[in-house]
Amino acid sequence: MTKYKYLPCERETIIRYADDEKMATVETFNRKYVQYLSKLFSNYPEDVRMARLQANADSIVVFVPKKWIKIIPPRKISEAQRIVLRNRMSKMNSMASKSHEVP
Image 1: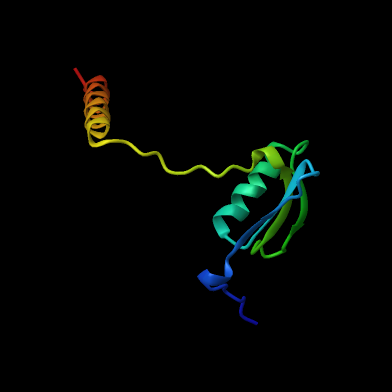
Image 2: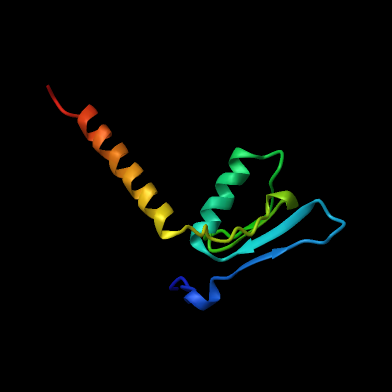
């Protein structure tokens, strides 16, 4: 029997929490998040509780502290800031390449 492959539109992530609860429920079929949440469970067993991990690792349901749930918009920077950051990164890269040169 062939293993079912979820379509991209089926690989959803659902986050649920109530105002009076301290924990949030995270359920996902997204491969990247299944691995990420599994690692969180391994690294933070006192904070993360696993409710379900499918045998074929297609989905996971975990409880995490609600304060871990954040929605962070992308950083907005001006063109002038972008130039300053680009120059700073170029300088750091050139210093790193000089430190790796063989005398």
